[in-house]
Image (cartoon, rainbow, N blue to C red; front, top):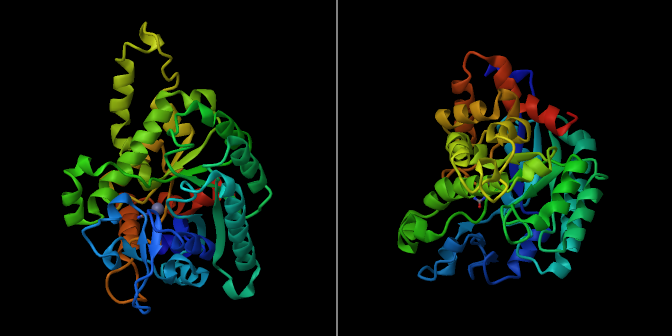
Amino acid sequence: MSSTSTSPIVDIHTHMYPPSYISLLSKRTTVPYIYQPSDPTADPRLIILESDDDPSKPKESRGRPVDSTYSSFDKKREFMSIHGISCSVISLANPWLDFLDPEIALSTAVAINDDLENECAKNNSSSEHQGLKLYAFGTLPLSAPAKDIVSEIHRLKFLPHMKGVIMGTTGLGQGLDDPALNDVYAALASTGTIVFLHPHYGLPAEAFGGPSVVSKTGHVLPLALGFPLETTIAVSRMYLAGVWDQHPKLEFLLAHSGGTLPFLAGRLESCVAHEREFIANGGKTQGPERSIWDVLQNNIYLDAVIYGKPGLKAAIEAAGSVDRVMFGTDHPFFPPLGEEGGKWLSVESNKTVINGALSQDDQSIKKILGGNAVRVLGLEL
Ligand code: URA
Ligand code: ZN
């Protein structure tokens, strides 16, 4: 791929569970938790999704194995080198701090954010890791009072390697259209903090035919369909509640190319236009003032983690230009099933899709693979 040899590849969707988070999950016995099998040579199991904790299975085979690729910065660098990635913007993986007692949420967020900041600073100043830069998205103490969340948003602005925050779809517990998030959104907008919105909860098993269907097909339905639909619903609710009317500078980067939003935005727009309850149509409820296209093209960025040409083309079309779409890998999830050391199918298939969808357009490929991230997140490479 000649277009990339002189241009940086930046991975904006790449996760870690720092050692302190691994130890937090290892002390728990209910979802989310890490189970250490009695065989000390076996990898611990990461049991974070409700559907992972299937009581009909022994704990040794619930969830997924969690090895050092989840917590080691050396493994992250090794993965970057194998795939020609020059910069990673690391985020804590789901379910972040959603489940923490409010009393310890702020101190835990501060510790994890400081850890990430220090590792990025150490990496970027070391001659040993030249050519591999690390930045991070911070994590917020969302179970804590809004004032604590706001204080962490302001503090993150003083950590030079923090380039935004990652957040799930539950907000303070009631979703992202909750008016109680107003101060949080105001702080994010006024500090120019971009939110990387990532799913975790999916849809109830009943949406897929019940737990027995999910159990037979493992993570396929929750990850392929549940995750993107969760994101679609969360952002649609924000849009309908007028969050972007109230906070016109609030910027979100949506995981998995915005779920199904690029494909369904027209239907959303049409249904809003036909909804009699909105004031604009003579109804009683204030509906969104801006069009969904306006929001998509001015407040929303999309990653390119979609693994198919039609999905990527819809993302570019909905975002209004290639300038708002950014490469990601979802590492360390979706590891190869075979031997270690080679390239990952999940990464290579996304690169192939980007090249295939834009085969005649080297400039656009370079933008998606790295140029957009450098510009939007203000990365120094
Ligand atoms: N599975 C997860 O739980 N999280 C991801 O980010 C990807 C796959
Ligand atoms: Zn992810």
